[in-house]
Amino acid sequence: MKINVKAFSLSCGIVWALVVFFVTWWLIILNGASGAKTVLGNIYLGYNISTLGSLVGLAWGFVNGIVFGAFLAWLYNRLAK
Image (tube, rainbow, N blue to C red):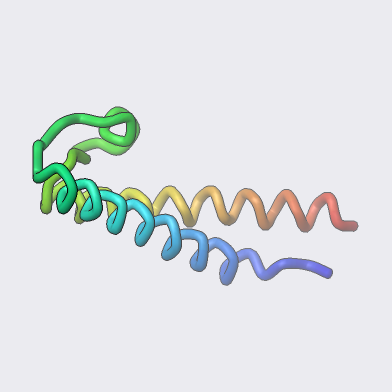
């Protein structure tokens, strides 16, 4: 059985983008918007713990999820032969 690469990568992109967005807002609600640079801030250019940072993380997370999801689906399809 093969995985549809486009559908899988899109779903991974949406899920990872929402995870980054909601975790950022969870941190904002618990600790307040500190603007502190995090590990994700070292990976995603412009990301920090703030309202603008949550939107930047949403965009970067979507792109990152699409790329990683496409790679995973491609790898699965190659190995499932």
